[in-house]
Image (tube, rainbow, N blue to C red):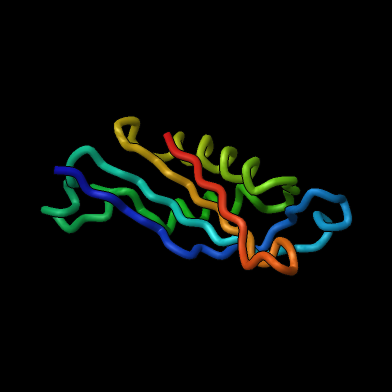
Length: 117
């Protein structure tokens, strides 16, 4: 039996884009973080936040990580977030990061990149 903690639709305003002009204005990207536990966390039984991953802390770490940085591609952002988050979750968990950029082109509703480990 396994379990997962999924953070959906985390909106971040950050500097991202291929050109310098595009990177100079903040844009919204939407993140999904999925952490898969090999077995249900102890918090399923105890109801204690100390027995699981506190997603409020993870969100603060993501926000702090992205603050005052510029990213060129959603692929770059996704991989950097994956590497940072891996350091903040138990080693035996699987992690997937999905980055969605709204309206990257006039005719394209969204572009999405997903990476996992």
